[in-house]
Each structure stands twice: as C-alpha cells, then as structure tokens.
Amino acid sequence: MWAAVGLLVIFVGTIVLTAANDAVHPPSHIETVDPAALADSPEYGNPAVAVRPDGSVVVSVVTQMYSFSPDPIVVPANRPVTFRVTSADVMHGFEVVGTNANAMAIPGYVSQFTVTFKKPGEYIVGCNEYCGVLHHNMVGKLIVRKESR
Ligand code: CUA
Image (tube, rainbow, N blue to C red; front, side, top):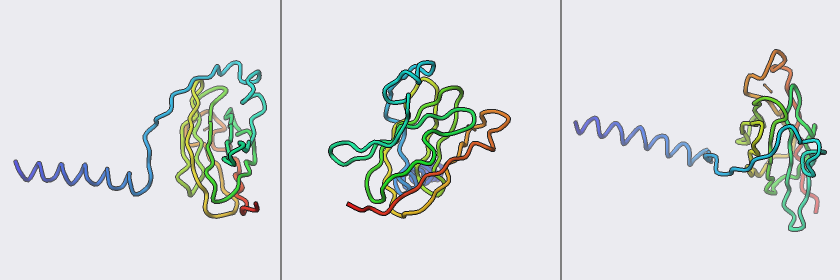
C-alpha cells in the first residue's frame, strides 16, 4: 500500500512541478461578452493593440472562421502583453507557436492571459481547436518588436 501511495505522490508531484516550471496557469478569469454584438462592442468592434497609460499592452483579439483579427498583431518585446481573446462564431484556439501563449477562444467569453515575449521576431498564431473544413487554414502572425522607448 505504501508503494501505491509513493507512486501517487510521485505522479502528482510531477504534474505540479512541470506546471510550475512551464508557467501553466489554470483559467482564472470569467468575463462574458455577447458574441452576436461584437461589431458594436467598443473593444471588439475594431480589435487592436492598445497601450494603456501605465505602459502595459492590451491586445483584443476576435477569432472567427477562419481568421484572427487583428492580423498581424504587433507587440513590444520584454513588456507584459495582456491578450483578451474571444470568438464571433464557434470555439477556436489561440496559440502563439513556440511560446506559452495558448488559450481557447470561446464564443460568449473573454479568455484573458498575460505573456511577456523576450525574443523579437515573427511568430505563427495557430488555431488548435477543430472549427470547420478550413481549420487548417486558420493561421495568423504575431510580430514582437524590439523595445524602443
Ligand atoms: Cu479556428 Cu480551428
């Protein structure tokens, strides 16, 4: 029996350690938005990258079959970037390939998370939820620019 308990401790410990190590965070933000009224929303009517007075960067993203808006998304390096992602139709994914920016885009909800990109360059934004026949064509671009302030 103690061997079984020992195994459980090892398994759970592995999950906790890898989650902490890879900075995985469980969803912690519940905010709703009317997916049918995104066009009239001050934030999602014309989704864009915004810089708040305190210098933090907020990116509002609308996903829909089969694109991301805005595209490309241009953000500065080495500054916290808060993404606020929603969907206008069905469930999509929003993953910045090669980083830990990865969330589901769910109609009716805002998925919010903050990431700091250290490496300037071009990144692929992919949809990782099957969303229709052209799911594989749903690709966007994120450009991380060197900080210049
Ligand atoms: Cu959008 Cu797959």
